[in-house]
Length: 368
Image 1 (cartoon, rainbow, N blue to C red):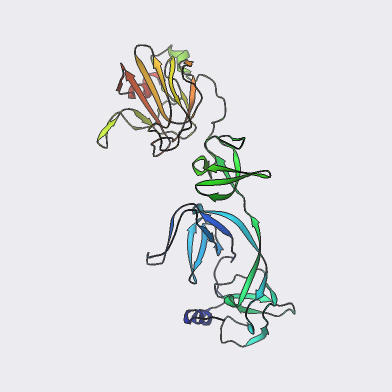
Image 2 (tube, rainbow, N blue to C red):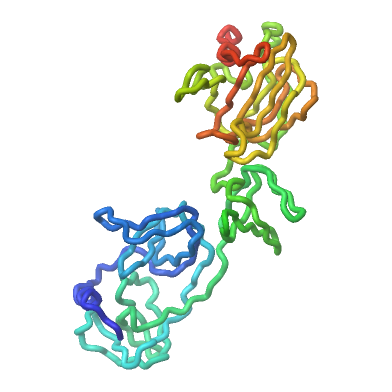
């Protein structure tokens, strides 16, 4: 049995107070690059995204990776568990392996185990990195040194629940927004999804682990503004059905360049409406996070050489050339394109020039 002084010392000082988590050896794959750091903050190992790992301990917060007889915790969000490893038995792999009463390399053995002998872990006992409490087929109970045995596992595939946040079609299968799916693996920037007996590949950008906001696949009324019934028909109505839309950025210079719209900080899935009658001039769908500045967006022609634009949408439901009425549903807000968070980027054009659209978004007179 190979020992180092570090192993020997650990065995001598081990006590009944052992590691406060259950040892196991589930498998997973890293969803992000990750650096293992020691207590001083020094990097001891770097894992790359997509790299396979074997976990030694699971807690509520994360998984522990064993490296050089030390444990380093990784947040659960950083790992997709792919296989559950259920312990079935323990096989002695060293000849003349001592079964000891206490966790010390120098304690008197109760029995000498033979190579190939099978023992069982004592249930309900938490074991540390170096010692395992086992029971022989003759009923003797004691500790064996961890490096002298091999743990046998039954591997079963793990299923993780997730949700589709961007509609996707693959191999004749359509995955709709908000649909709950079963993830079984991660490979080359995509998740492997199991549906019944079949497996499909969906890009990671189309999947989230928390349920997205509603409604996104619902069909709300075509018009929202009750104030139109009360105040008549204003020139424009706000693009969202809120009395005080949360404006996060206004028209003006930002980061050395013109920010030509009004940003409204709203959750993904917030319904967006036409601010006035018009014709859909542009309708862009299915853009990735970084391809197009506005991502999925709609642009509408209005009377008087005026246009409005609705950017960073999650889902667009109108088509180019389609007439729309004031208050008609155009789609849902999102985080597509060059965006750092879910919001609506709303622009107003007059004679082809972008002008301040804030007065359309913020109309307190409509809510008096």
